[in-house]
Amino acid sequence: MSDWTLGGNANGTPSYGNVIVARTAYRLHGTSRDGAQPFLFATAPYQIPAGKTLVSVTLPTQTGDPRTAGRIHVFAVANDGTPVPALTTVAAKDQTAKAGQVLTANLGSVNGGVPGTTGYRARVQWGDGTVPQDVTIGASGAMSGQHSYPREGTYTVRVTVWDTLSSSTGSFTVTVERGGSQPAIALAAAGTVRTGGAVTIEGRGFAAGEQVTVSVGTDPGRTTKVVASATGTVRASVPTSGNAQPGRYAVTATGASSGVPATATVRVTEQVQAPAYRPRMVLTTTSGPRGTSITVDGSGFAPNEAVTVVFGNGLAVSTVRANGDGVLSGATVSVPGPAKPGATSVTLTGATSATKVSRPFTVTG
Image (cartoon, rainbow, N blue to C red; front, side, top):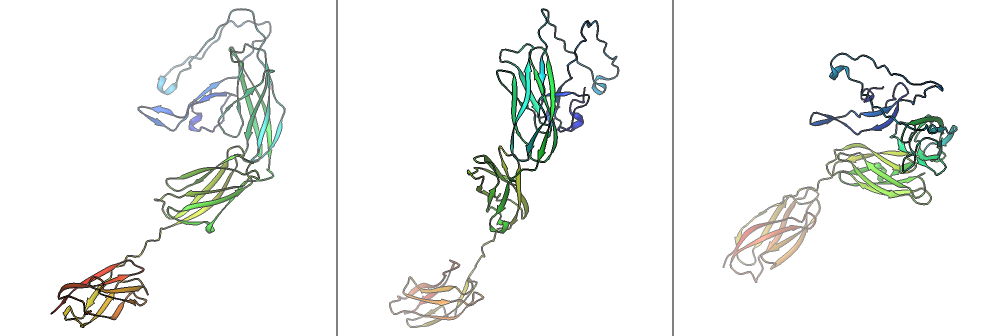
């Protein structure tokens, strides 16, 4: 039998012609898990030659520590009664397919044996490292399945059928040629977005009406699903993570049935920070009677923005403009006639920066 984790390579090929019956997602290691994926293997069935009777089975002598040397576990099933026709499978003929397109494959046929209450069971290994799939078995025993190969090449397909007593495996090859239409995507906005912004893609070459999963490889990743049009086109927007670091990230669109990923690269840049304005102002005089002219100097405003000068509670209002450095120099405001003696203020308000600064002024009698 093969090593039960294929040496830690979940995509490895079993030795000795072993057939993969099942595979788990992980292996327990103490109270945690490790990355190995254990398999349940079956050997090829052994047919006792006609006219012969099995007398004994001799197993190897096992020595050493069971933890390091391992142990063979033997399971036996006995059946008394009239022999039934042996389980027989007829392997399918070699077939061809196109990359990225769904292959509806003839997987051969099965007869004989002792089917269960739900009939035969079968599983297919497509030969491209994907997880084995259950097989559809018709009333006549004909087997079929669907698969999409993403790349060109020649793949060996193995189909294992079992009933309540035994199993049988057949194989054939699928030669995958270049597909006529390969999915492709293009990014809007020259392929550049700011952190937290949305990546917009337009794609073509997908199967009509198939569901397409679009993902952006920022950390954490972002994914959305759309349905291709009748002509195989898609359009989708996927927001990047608000915590994404500036850099280049993969954008992938994969059709559920075509299975061929279309990729592109997006450049994520830093979010532009709004400038912080902290205006300041100085009055040439801080007190005086009605009619007093007050010269106002200010700084820290947005470049060339309009600045409103207000005396008191709107008794006098005028508008001036800061220069390219956000500086206001020599603006004047007079104490208006209606001003009452006492404490008041002069206020500057920037139209662009939306900032405000005030200084006290006292109107004398």
